[in-house]
Image 1 (cartoon, protein in one colour):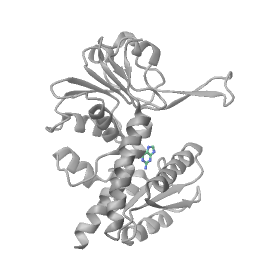
Image 2: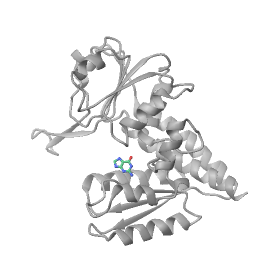
Image 3: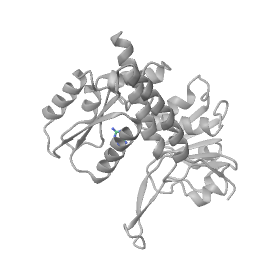
Image 4: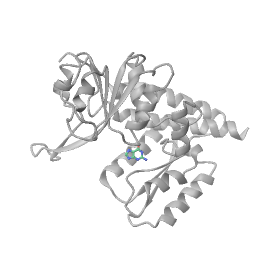
Length: 297
Ligand code: GUN
C-alpha cells in the first residue's frame, strides 16, 4: 500500500474542539446553540444517525431536542411541528432525518424549514446561495466535510481535475458546486459522472481527485484510478458477511485495498468522511446561533 490514510476521526475531533470553543464564546453572550432533530418512524439506520447527532451536541455543549413522530404521522403533524420550531427563537437549527416515510414528501419538508435554521443546507434558498458563491447561507454537511478533509490534509484542489461520481442532491451536486467555487481551497475543474455516463472509468482515470458518492459497494476499482490520485470515499454500504457477529460489514464505494495501492491519499470507511458530516452539522448549528444573535441586535 502506498497511499497515506486521511484520518477523518482525527480531523473531525480537531474541528469539534474549535466548535466547542465557539459554543463557549456564544454562551458568554447569553446564547446556547440548540439543534432540533426530527425523526419520523423507526428506520434503524436513521435511529443510529439521530443518536450520534444528539450525543455529539451534548459533547460540544450544544443543546438538542429530539422529536420522534410515529411512522404513520400525518403531514399536518410534521409541518405543524416544523412551524413551531421555526417560530421558537431558542431553536437555531432544525433537521428532519431522511428518508421520511412515504406519506411525507422530502421536497415539502425541505421547503418548510426556515432557511435561517436549515443546518443541512437542503432548502432551495441555501442551495441557490451555494451555487451563487454567496457565503451567508449554510454549507452542506457532507460536501463541506470533504472540503475540510482536503484542506486539513494540505491537498489543494485548485487547478486540479476532480471527478465526482454520483449526482445526488445531498452529496454529488453540492460537492461539485463547492469544488468548482472560485475560492481558496476550491477552484478545481470538475466533472460529474453518474449512472447515465457511458464508460465512467475513462473520466475517473483522468482525475487528480476522485469523490465517490454513488452508493454502490466497492464500485471504484484500483484499475480505474490515475496513479497518485486522491480518493475520497463518501459511500457507506452494508454487505452481507455471515462470518461476522452482525452478519454484515460496512464498506465504501471504493475497493479500499486496490485503491490504496494506486492512490497517493485515501479516506477509509468507516472513519473517513462519516465523522466529518456530523462535525459540519455541529458547526452549522453554531453558525445559525451566531447569525440569529446578529439579527437580534
Ligand atoms: N439522511 C442521510 N443523510 C442525511 C443528512 O445529511 N441529513 C438528513 N437530514 N438526513 C440524512
